[in-house]
Length: 399
Image (tube, rainbow, N blue to C red; front, side, top):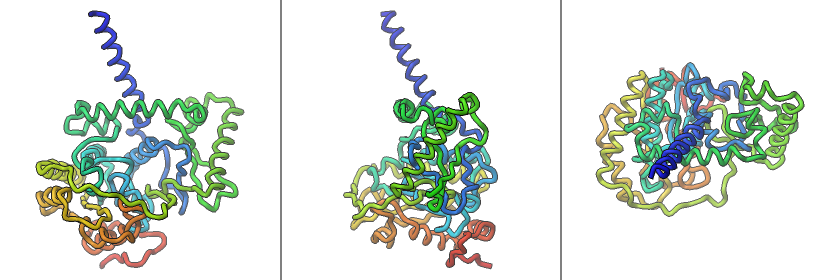
């Protein structure tokens, strides 16, 4: 009996250790960003080659420590990834930054905004994109799904003790270990990043002679310890990665405004058979409570919240899933700005989507930007302070 207890406790200890170790890519959220998105030249991007998804997420979260923060920021999951600074008529980074990533759920966006509000790092205008309940049957509006830094998890309703938080953290630890022990990336892991992969920033016109900019301006312990010959070999390896991206024409990555750049388009567009049911009627109260918490956190930091209910392309909209979110939005305080685009023209035309029926494109966000410019004084102030370098017409600041 005692032996079984010892084995059980040892197993639990190993699990906890894996969770902690697996969270290491996010452990430095309290430190400055490792990628200086603010310094990106026009059309430059952090290319995706050999940079795991969880590292891309960590890089975006690290921007929350940059001061002063961008004037406007959008938060949400992958459905917001094509929201660009130019579509909102703003400068990249200083004017606008896209904080969205991965499979963030609505409760997780709340936790991130609570953390950012407590750290005095919120943009003046916070746009929260609410994923359509048609995606994943609405579960992402009510549950945790994404492993996040412990500083963010502490903002959750039940903190670390939420079963879904513990489960996701453990799964993330396994994912991290699997990516970590990719022997083709070990040298790069030691020198160039925390979790494997080269951080290469370039512009398309640099493909004939790529210029490499690595993640850390201050050398790490490993960078200082490696012999010069080995460091040179790692640089050559990174150069090969950049040249491969150029030769294959895949320069997709994260731009200076946090949006996705040059992601190859699928032709024909990828269309889904969207579910009609999933959420329960009582979930409307849970969603409204989460949105109210978000408003409270943003307002306490002196920022302004804009809720954007995003559409999916679908021939049918009058379905139970949409009805639940509609009831939730109706429960909110009238002072909260809500832009509900689930049932408008955007949901009835693929012209407002990138290459499928769930990711709105720059045209969609430009229309939102124009409406904000007319109705939101704080947004107009951001336009006046950080106008788009390209001078995009249609977003004139009202006198």
